[in-house]
Image (tube, rainbow, N blue to C red; front, side, top):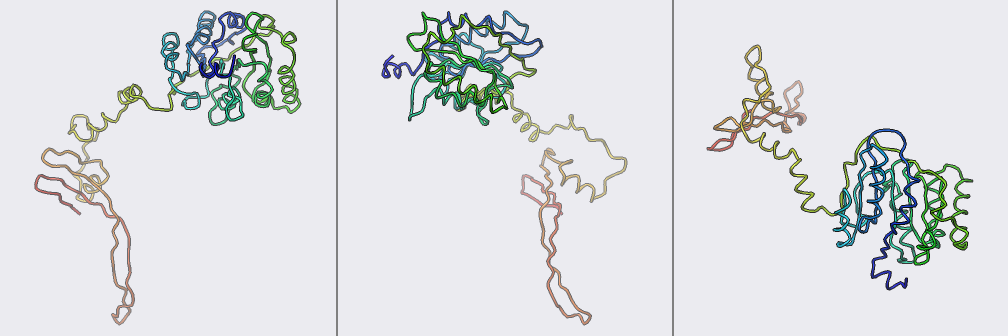
Length: 344
């Protein structure tokens, strides 16, 4: 497709349904209970990620959740109808956790400032600061075959057990797409990293008939479930719906009401065995254990720094020096209708 047509679509090329159907039988889940988190940072209309979700729900007892990110509004609205969670924002702005067990990544096919967009997506989403992958999370990276040369370094250093398969003949020609499979985590072996890098660079240049198709997949890719759900999946911009939900769950209003309302009935303090001496009462008020709204007035305890001056004298009673002593003094402040009073 010409570059101008590519940009008019925002670099978006939906994954053909038939190609995903060839992948699904090879995706398994390891035995266990808990959650399975599936992410598509370029979700489009949500079709590919929805297929993944349907597959795992039918073949496991896990709590499967799909998470999509889509920048274009029309596609975002369609994705909302088929996915569990969708964010209307760019992939680089999302706030989330490193808990995704599988990531389907079909980024825009383009080049910006002499760098492939596909590489930028991959590098950001697997970086230390923005990583979204759970340990050994499965990457399925859908890109044009010739782009593998640009992505070879990041793929070989951050993923292991890397394998590449191309689209079938009926779907390959328009965009020359291949799918890279790999588990997140460095191979920790320089020889293996070098071997994977050379493998990817070779695949980028050889004729397509020498690259196995998705029909030739022989491996089974196992996903490890998570014991905890994802608690943070947010856009970079705070929207009114998120703010409203946060305020509903926030304890701030309860705390505010508790502090300004007289709640004698919920007091947990017990009556002392002996009457408090004046100093004890002052300490209790200053510490906040006693006080607050007393009906006709409000009592607040506070502690503030005080500097006192004294004079040093010799045996003859002559002043030799001034001595400044700093300490803290507890004060009881009383707010009444007639004014504010401090009791020391």
